[in-house]
Image 1 (cartoon, rainbow, N blue to C red):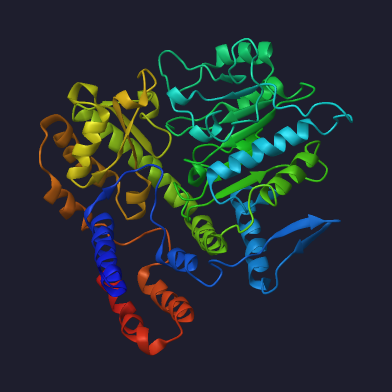
Image 2 (cartoon, rainbow, N blue to C red):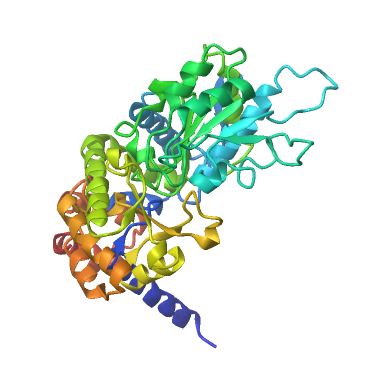
Length: 481
């Protein structure tokens, strides 16, 4: 029977080993992940972690139900301002702790909104019809009836299935929408809620096209854009609010620089016809979906948003350059790359490849992992099921932030192709490549951030004698990295 110290020592050893492997020896290409900066990580473990700050609007005033939250109030106000600047919108809801929760809040609120004129005794109805992206064609799970949409959309009595219709895909590019077919479907079906966004996300969504068709309808459908994967690309990819979207949801830890949580943003104001909807969104955020909204990661999100607003243009530009350079290099090495070649195979951070002739997607992803290249296998639009996935999905965002440029992704493409086509062993070469990219970019340089990290760290752990060795050497650690 191990003692407590022995159990902790063993776990610590495993943590150290995993940290070293993922952060120093691997090329991380999972498109839904990123590594936050040191300052963001330290915010996550600061005092607000584990605290409470429940609040809601009552009689026109925001009422907090806990004491000792003056700092959190300041953080929320500042974060709303910073994210409002990022999205160029007036309304931001910060309390969702995941992108999926953000979506569920919208679905709950939308149902409440459409029931606002219900007379006493009338049954409470669900959404009559929702349009979204097909799960099998890259649609996000959280926008499906089997995900967060569960229980919020009516069933068709004839089929027993939820009344959900999908954006039609183009035959020449299954990752783009057939707008001619879409126009006909919209006119004939009249959905109440239209949900853009994908998890296999290569190209822009036709937000403006849809808005121009439905803008004069009465009632007009609500346009929602789940930007989970591309939240950090708001601007370079597209600006949905300027194209007619009412609501944006998303995760803050994929292409955005932040910790794992969610966000809701909107153009809705007090004078908007949808003002009641925003009230319902706030009510579904609290008390409808959260109590403790994870204040440590809330603070970390503010720090990350400072970074994003400072480096947005350079970061986003490099993301697109790197993704297209990587896709092009893979294609030149004989790998089948998905997406429209006219657009460089991708408009986002993602690169999707078809590997079926070299083996099942799962097997190829495992082979890459053995060589310290971390990806995920992916069902492509013409695959029968996820278990028979013939693709691999990758994203350039994390390694872009660690300093990789176009030429570096071309080098990486050579190694990836060798693993896939030749079953080559490139593990040592990948370690050598990663060793060149250990310092994080698009944030304060480590030599500038070290003193700030030390200040936060010592305020968390006030026994300075115990942590003095770590703190005294922090500047040297930064320089060494």
